[in-house]
Length: 67
Image (cartoon, rainbow, N blue to C red; front, side, top):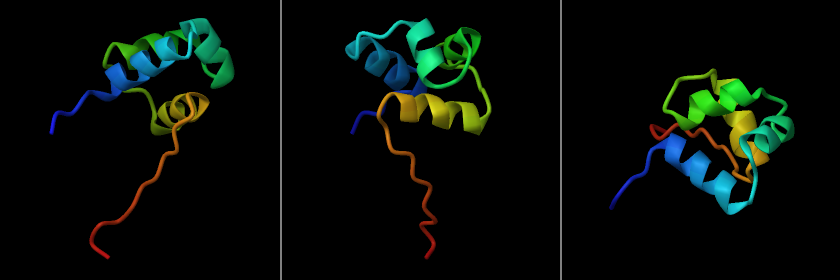
């Protein structure tokens, strides 16, 4: 199985939806600078990343696999 980076997933989905970085920033209540950081492999806060993913239509789930 081949895995993609989170930055590529976000960038590709944004482009698939026909959104600019500014559009995504507005939809995620973030800044264009944060979108650039994420798409270039930077490490924004988890809350920023989750907002961006949700604005793109992703459901974010954190599950404890030990249970």
